[in-house]
Amino acid sequence: MTVILSPVLARWGAGADGSPKANRALFATFLVIATVLRKTRVPDGSGGQTDTYASVATAACNFERALIRAREQEQFERIENMSYWDFSFVPGSVDVRPTDRLVVGTRTFEVVARGLGSSTVVLTIICMEIL
Image (cartoon, rainbow, N blue to C red; front, side, top):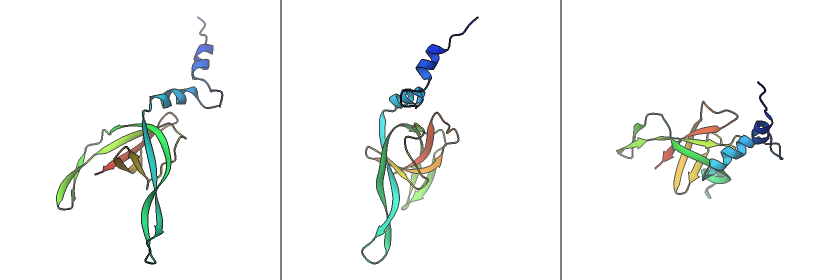
């Protein structure tokens, strides 16, 4: 039996720009735009410095509640439920660092870690929503 791979290679091989076509197919399923905010230090006007977050990039992604058990944390004399979220990006489409924040619409998320399942197919970033 002969297996002809040319249709498979044409469909999933490298695109005209050299990028894998699979990345472009995956990218087409990412329906949310996330803004990456990077922590920077700026003068506070009193001779010191303060932390602020500046927008450094936007990227298409998907996000969903992570399969990590939520935890409770005391915050300002009340208990808040802290939930984790998995963000999926096409590798190489965005530079996300451990001190960054992601903004989707009116929701802000703080980067916690890079997902253990991150590979050349999907870059997974684990975040905690800032309430």
